[in-house]
Length: 243
Image (tube, rainbow, N blue to C red; front, top):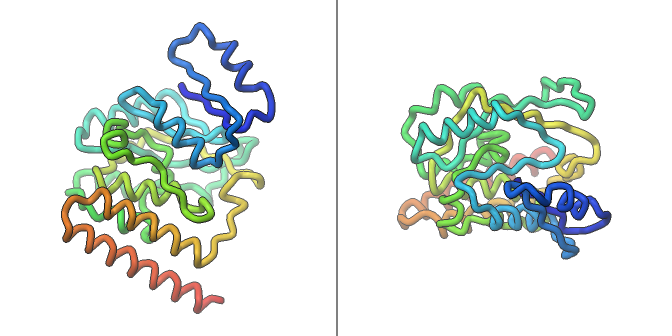
């Protein structure tokens, strides 16, 4: 387990370091560089030395059986770079929020389908793989391609763009029993987002960067850029019509 604090507003990290000093499987990374959430997660990804890793923000929860299901899904699918499961939404008090669930129920039926390397270009616009950012990742694929999270201009949707980049290098697989409990509250990061047209432009630019770097075939790179810019054009037109 890797824990990171890049701000040092209190002594929590040091207390955790002291408490778990005798545990070789727990590392606490702390400094006062004041990095944003993208920088913080990249610190954790680069420090990871294991075969798999999972990004789990402090306000989300997942049990050992859920993790075991995600692990088994990657063992059963050698060409998969990520496994993910259903996401159950709830309040901080544990009250269900069914309207915000991201259950991905149809993904189980798609598991056996051939993987399209351009699925990453469709990911953001189609809304597929909701909650997959918090799935289990095959670390070797990330290290091999130096696939760190690239910032969008205001950090909005940086994690979704990174997920598209990951989809360019390998398939995703669904584990119905690999659940995640996502807890919503007014102060969570995404609740403060006011998404504007410029944010979609920035997200598209980042995804095109991933496509140009990660897709080996020039035809695939061109097709990905065309698909991404097409989705952007339609989204901007819809925003303009609703303004």
